[in-house]
Image 1: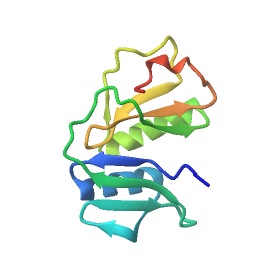
Image 2: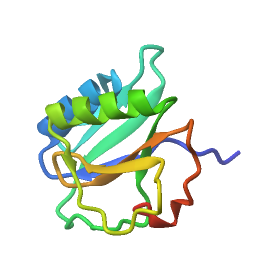
Image 3: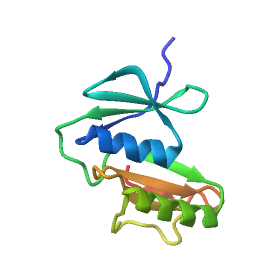
Length: 131
């Protein structure tokens, strides 16, 4: 039976990406299926959460698929956005936010856009989100 696995994110600097995403999501770099071009990050239970793969393709400003990281409150969203920026994320000057958005668009250290969504205010009409 076909099942959805986990997202894989293309990165230029694999070690930097491992440091960012393990810290951002409290994950562990698993030795399972790890090599110089691929890493699998797992949660404390050992569940595979995200794959990181070396990619030479350019970052897309508006990728067709992106990650949504979710929090439960606006205060938590503000705190997490600040923490992610400290870890190396950057805030993207997003010109397509809807009025009173429930999401903030950031980019990981490789420039891949992702959102931090406040579920207490969702949905904002995610037409402006990077997907």
